[in-house]
Structure formats: structure tokens, C-alpha cells
Length: 81
Image 1 (cartoon, rainbow, N blue to C red):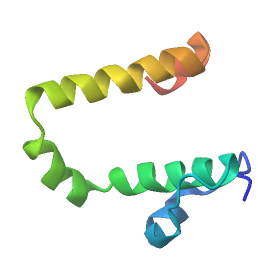
Image 2 (cartoon, one colour):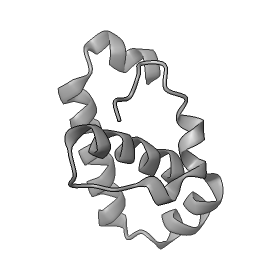
Image 3 (cartoon, rainbow, N blue to C red):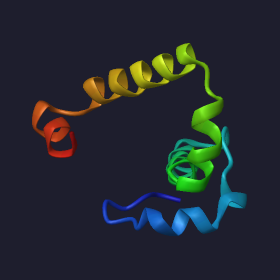
């Protein structure tokens, strides 16, 4: 399973049973994309976010932006943020 650059990630929300980590890089990458698409669901977020502790929010935001800084060029970063 190799993700194409034009993969429609909206399809991933419908297939959470296909999330599997630890088999190989391609499956991990596709499973991560599926997981992130599911986590972006408004209903899920409305339940999860209020339950997070302040430090959990800070840690998660810090980790996400650390990954973006590591893997995005300046131009790519500012295209989205």
C-alpha cells in the first residue's frame, strides 16, 4: 500500500478497521493518515479536547509543530499556517 500524492484522505475516515501499525512503512504511513483523518472529526474532537489536561494539550501542540518544523520547508509551512 503506497500512498499517492493525490490520495483522497477523506476516504480514510470510513475505514478505521484498516488501521494497522508495525507491519511495514507503507502500511504505517497509510494507517497514520487514516488515524489523523479520524481524529479530525468534529464530534470526536468535541469529546476529546475538553478531557485533555492543560499539559497534554501543550505537549501535543509542541510535538506537532516540532514535526512540522523538521519535515516542512519554510514555504510549505506557511502554505498551511
